[in-house]
Image (cartoon, rainbow, N blue to C red; front, top):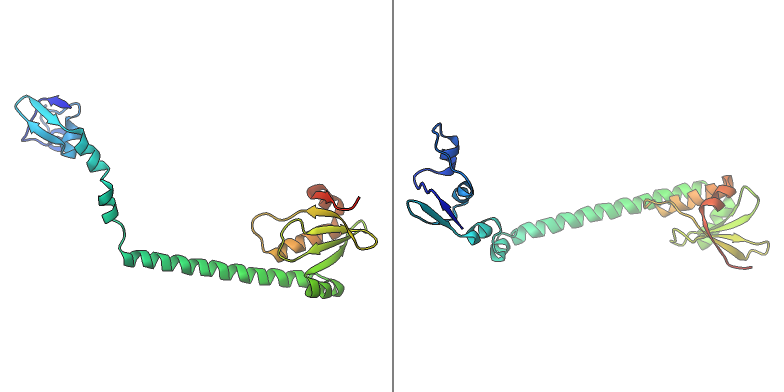
Amino acid sequence: MWYYGCDKTTTSWQTWTSNTATTSTGPQIWYDWNGTSTACSSDTHYYTSDYSWDRWNPPENVLISSLPSRTLRETREREERSAYAVTVEQKVKAQRVAEQLLLENMTPDQREMYEKTKRFHVISSEGKRFEVDCNGRRYHNVNELNAEGKRIVEHCIYQRGGTPLGDNYLAQKLLLECDEKEFRRIANQTQLIG
């Protein structure tokens, strides 16, 4: 690249901010600010485009040398582990609180069955019997039972948003007890026994 009209004594900033009528035009400003001039004579200014690119996009070895020190990286990693531990601790506490709330909303028979098998039965608002499986599954854990207690339909319904499992089970229980029709409308169903 080249540009006509070189002035070695005046920088671009001086030219732009001066009160004189002299101005730089075209790429002169870019080259002066980025120091890309390689040669200058009285009427021609020569530039290399590689220098500008390298100045704005340093080679990888420069980027590697500017990485944080080992101590800084270790500090960041330690902080991240600490934040993760706090998050895990909060989740564990939320799970305990949710399970306690679930237990408080169970009948004595439901609570006894839950403590033995991590399941409990619910009589729906329509008088049908369901079993809620609380063995760590968020969905596909509600089964409709026939008169003999066999699973006949599997229902998939759950709360979104990562709520604690106890809250999910309680929501399933309450919806069945209060509005089985709405439960059936929302849930996906899989026939297990014809």
